[in-house]
Length: 420
Image 1 (cartoon, rainbow, N blue to C red):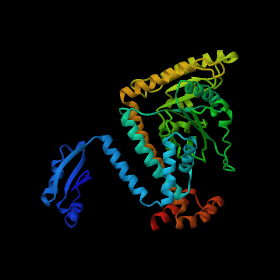
Image 2: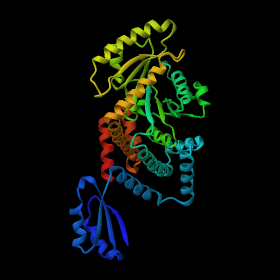
Image 3: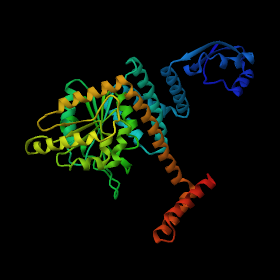
Image 4: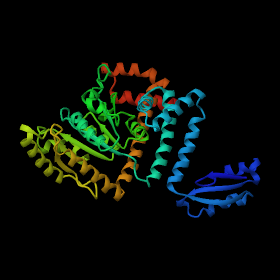
């Protein structure tokens, strides 16, 4: 009998436990990562304890990652009821078949703050991740989709541009997904979600999917689950993902941590190049597009283009193979939009060939892991029984001036540490 095992290094307690099981006379086929070399040193403990180690196989990074994801998926699915398992399977099957309704339902699930639904969402995401990795391997390791972030101040014409740009892409055979992030009210907590109403033609296109999502107070206008929604859209067969963000200021750099290319849209009357540098967000831009470059605004648009070309020369180079460019476009006349898409494809080809695109995506995964950890830790802190009981009292003392905010925070942290 052969038993397949994947171990970075055989743990002594595991090996001794195997001696007390019926597997004593079984043959083990061990899998290791390439950085462990031939694996012979790791195989020695098996032989020393009388266990038969008949084969040691080196895993490629892709296969090793797939095995790890499958093991994680198994851990998640063990606690599901039959009804929950059927629900997740139904969403997954419909999603990879390209059903828009199932994609919408899946994104709603990952956006849920309900604890049990969060667990179901993670099971679904793990299944989609396995499917995604298999498709990438068939694509010779190349990304399945091109992720583009769009940002700019209110009134820059983002929605108008996306409709014209999106129709052009779908006519060329692409499948486009637009994740439009709308600001939530600080007073009521509600969100207008009006971007879809501005894209009337694109919203009726069967090769396009538009999903407005509220920020729910998230800094930077990017929702907590936007990254997961991108993965679901790619699993649904969409090869171009546009993330349109609120565009309210410097905190918008958050979108750059989840896309391959960051495009900044600016209106012709947006101030001089100094204002652009002060905003800080221009440092993150791979491409700057001056919108509304038609009619009476054509002359101001040319002036702003020249000023931003000069401004970008002062900034530090972020890529070895690409220098940010400034172009003029008009969604009204269509001028410059085809050329803009050509530059975006050029950026994708250059960064993919140099390996920068793959490295950027890996860094983004790490950044978003820590972002989610920070949010989860804060939520755990707020809902902790001891802390929860002291928050109203300390808040009243801070409001009355009897206690400084720093001391109140220290008291809450001490209560959290002392009982956790």
